[in-house]
Image (cartoon, rainbow, N blue to C red):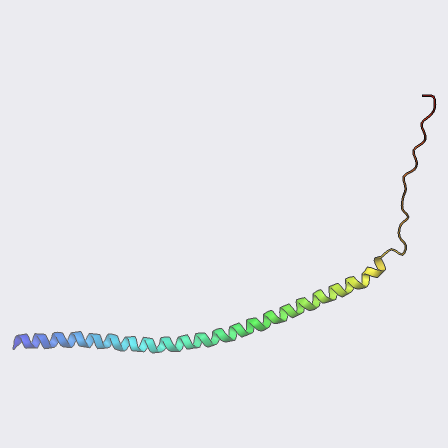
Length: 100
């Protein structure tokens, strides 16, 4: 009879502790799933915000570059010379003297 009581108490302790562990894991698993879902949603909104800001920056950069090239094109005719510079020809060497 004493062995039966010891076996019953041991079984109760093993299964009782096991059930507590399983219940704890179930609760953790449930909160982990909700946390992962929340992080995933927040990550989506963050990436959308980053895409929009990058798109705006690229658009601003493109417009700035476009304005610079148009300004350079407008300045180019003003800076061009009106007539080509005269070609410089080297002077003819003097003929050698006859007595030397």
